[in-house]
Length: 156
Length: 156
Image 1 (spheres, helix red, strand yellow):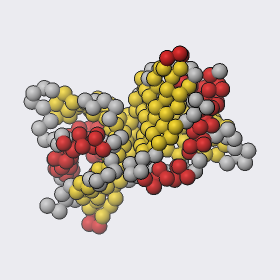
Image 2 (cartoon, rainbow over the protein chains, first blue to last red):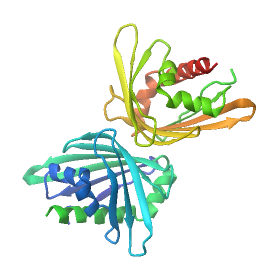
Image 3 (cartoon, rainbow over the protein chains, first blue to last red):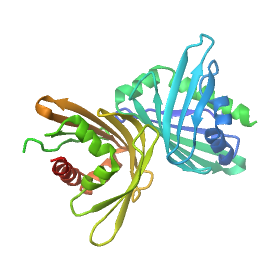
């Protein structure tokens, strides 16, 4: 699978770095991140459905979305958009309301590659190493990987 | 000086932790952080004056302020408020526009102490160690210390 998610977890720094290539231009992958109608169709694990309640993807905007599975249990996520540059860059805060005040900064850079392809480069900055471990232990990597596969299906 | 700023810089983690006590209740120190008319009177080094352009201190709000000295050179700072809990907690992003995309997460907890005093406990989370060193090398500690002295003068 040439477009696999690559997740890098440095030992002593509270970061998760990741890369994912797509068989689509940066503009399309950016749009899937910035347009709530698209975003809610791909984000998160396959078994959960997402309802976007608020999604104002511009500098100073904010967002909130809720995910639920067949058991009806809801998980809510919210944050603010600090920076948004069309087709190129999003910097946002991210909080799972089930871990209150454990807020991450999410850097996402979208860059075109030859052949109409693109690469998403991301960094999540956690408030401490424990917070990062909590996210990693709770299926973060598989949830991200499944989300990006759904994103690619959506753009296809 | 019993109310000195205590700054803690852990060796391998991209944080700056700090504490500062005030001879005023948490509610007053919080107000000095959340009310732009007060904020612009104390923030930053003594030799700079601050002009607040935008300051919407509520969850999902944003802010921008500009500092200038006698030389007229302006330095702008901006961010979003992720969380705001009255008299208790602010979590915001922070960017010096002179270091574009080097964005920190700023945790501020306000807690009352006996005798009408209070303590501010802060953590700044940097996107990497280099960014933290850049801020520390550019007078961050002395600027913060001077600001808090001005805050105390303002509340007096």
